[in-house]
Amino acid sequence: MKTTYLEYFIEVARTSSFTEAAENLYITQPALSRIIKSLEDELGTPLFVRARKKLILTDAGHVLNKHAHIIVKQVDLLKTELGNLLTPKKGHIRIGLPTITNSFFFSKLLASFHHEYPDVTFQLEEDGSKVIEEKIIDNRLDIGVIVLPDDHSRLDYFSFINETLKLVVPSSHPLVKKEEVTLDELKKEKFIMFNQDFELRNLILAACKESSFQPNIISETSQLDFIEEMVASNLGITLLPESTCAELTSHLHTITIANPTIEWNLALVWKKDAYLSQIAKEFIRFAKSKLTNLNDSSSP
Image (cartoon, rainbow, N blue to C red; front, side, top):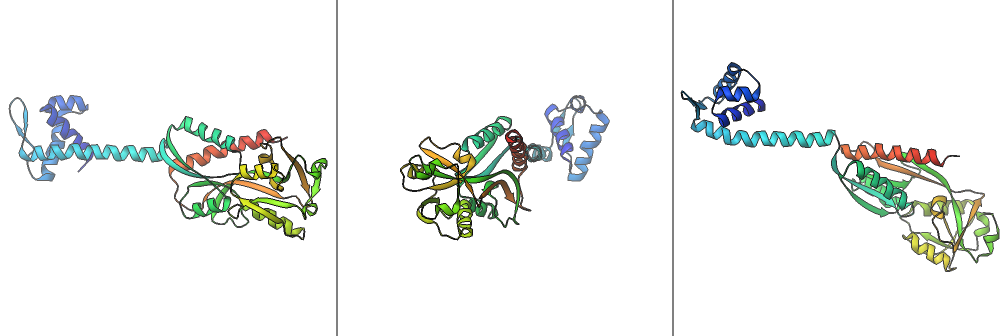
């Protein structure tokens, strides 16, 4: 039973006239009569009593009329929802963001996307790269921004930040007079670091191991603000990405680290071969475009 035939039947039932219904539907009256006859043959019962001046619904016609309205409405709803999927306008996206990135930039990114797709909603979670990666693998997040791990075989990704870590010390620290330090010079320093949920911690530990020492970690936290306050209070030193250092207060001083330099690569990631809604795919496309422009504008 074709949905279109049901729509034609509804119009005939509404107007009680083949002639008027045919004019409204922009088809010929004989064609409309044949369609109604095919419905009656399929159902095995007459749908109209054909009086001289108008059509009257039979009992079967009343039953079909009630259900035809429901069926047509549900089919229209189905087409609308499928259309929203295929042409992304609505939806919900779950995004994980690390606490040490430039929150202002990502706020602008989300605002730009929301301007184009005002009916899309977001679930934002701030955490360390490890936790965000786990949630993406477990399908608890759709998309994330993380420090790309060495083994990223289960992820599709788009790298957009490649920079190095810098030493952050209080303005009263003896090393502030230096433009550059080696990691070996930090052996006796007290380190304030992000906790084990952050890939940044692993990068620093691996670099220190390469320089043949174990850092003296006196405090670990998940909050950038707390790290900043502790360093400013002269409780220890820390290492942070260049872009993060640019947002620190004037009470702190940053110094280039050489031998070895510690690279920090940030990527937009999503689970490889996983189902993504059309709106999530559209967000990835949109973010790639914006992040590519960010890289181009920051290039010398």
